[in-house]
Amino acid sequence: MSSDGPSPPDAPPEQGPYPGEQHTRLSGAWTALVIGLLALVLILVFILQNLQNVELSFLVFHGHLPLAVALLFAVILGATIVLAFGGARIAQLRMVARASRRRGAKTSPPAG
Image (cartoon, rainbow, N blue to C red; front, top):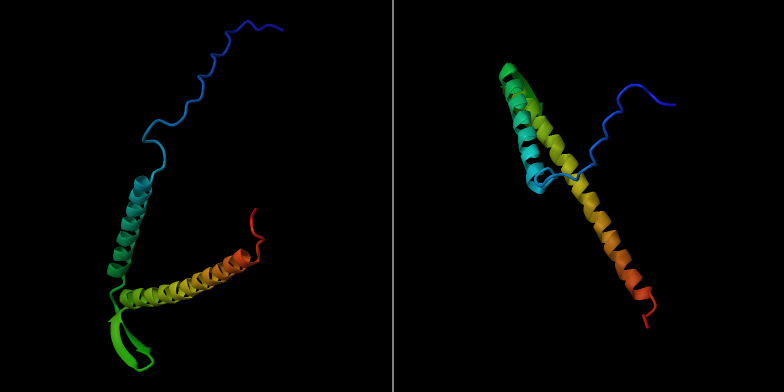
């Protein structure tokens, strides 16, 4: 079957990315910097909008702080706890892997 209309143009062959279009460490660092700055701006806006004082009591500590500062301290404390447990788990897994490698090296038959 033939068509009376013009035939569609052939698509150009696909080319690889040009130099500079590839993802590099520097482009990843730049992206992280921009995202970090945006997060800091959002945190600053949050702090400036929540300046009313609240009373805090924690164990033997008592005092008054702005609400946003108190919440920021709570987030930092929570992140520190998560990082501590995560670091301990990573150290535990590394010790298990190291012990497994040592056992594997001792029990493998000699090559030759």
